[in-house]
Length: 480
Ligand code: NAP
Image (cartoon, rainbow, N blue to C red):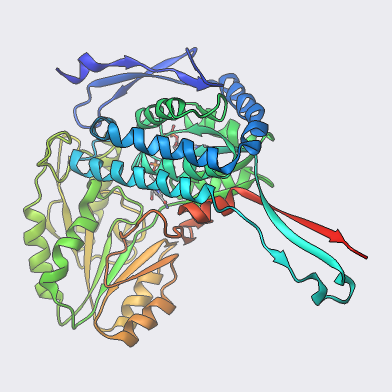
């Protein structure tokens, strides 16, 4: 059966109903260009209806006991476990993520919803020592955490299932309702999860899925006063635009980076090569904490470069649905063109393209660049492609300065056997998370995750997202 045989027409999910939209657009496989589905292009009015449905559902969701919210999320996790292979195929078809990597994403998504179910059961405030103040004597004070209301969730293409889970999971756990706008290239994963959530017993209106253009649907969500919070994952350009328009709405932004790892002189290079190659090229480098910059100490630089290039050349390029494939197509032909231009700029400026550097259809070959100057686009911007730079450093201090010389600050890694060096790096790296003896690409879904500088504001990782998605209320009893 070819992809064409499977093409189906999708609908908007508004107030628990699958609603036919006014306008549709074909969704194409990034790898083959084949049409894989017909997707609604929601209008402002259709988005308005979704917001209205979500608002109506806020009371019901806020009153739903924690054990029921947890049960819905647990059921969703079970349903997803049962249909894990189908879910991985959907991710792979719509995003060109190699299917083996897509299976990993599904496994993580299941875990994310399980963590969300657990968090639903432990949302609480604290009792306060009001009598520490002279005027606070004989008063009992405590805080509670209440749901924030309607959450507008806007998600990117690169983890179409798990990054949606990082918004939908904690929003339901905290008793909110949601209007979800998935990335235009990857709506199928969200629509699939929405079907499972209906089956899991989520009330009508608690989750609405509105597919369509970022400018139309996204803008409506950001500008509508009934939406209390925007949780956004995507590019700094769009994120900063949202922040500027959102006024007093709560906004969390999970944005991009040009993540780096430092390799100290005492590191066993053979032991870390395969991990570094995975960090650089997994999902074609389209990961917000993809390894883009390597700073290797001069004493181990040559060995690292040689081994890294050897391992890179062994990566298999091909169809995302082939389980043997390591690297497949970039998300769009524009991204292929952009990255080839950036590589050319680096070459013209004297950098060495040690391997890769060319494209084949929509696939950019895994590319290793040496001696790239810090001002080049491949260095100072987010490449979001299978491109990695390896640079020689003379000291760890120099490397830390180079890592910090970036507009971004999501995560960084350092391999070292020296405890003091590790502690210094943890203290001095200007990022949201420092990985000692690992690549910056490490993430499990319950850890606090987010960045500084242009990498964003706020944190995800269920417990932390629940905090962002609830409002603190103070209650004071006067016993005088
Ligand atoms: P993107 O182009 O910024 O799109 C993200 C989402 O925003 C999409 O749903 C997009 O819709 C929507 N959007 C576009 N214009 C909008 C507007 N004016 N108002 C509101 N929403 C709008 O990002 P992407 O290319 O999908 O994803 C890649 C980026 O995400 C990279 O920078 C990556 O680093 C970042 N990312 C960050 C994290 C993290 O946790 N920090 C995780 C993953 C990815 P359309 O698809 O319809 O344009």
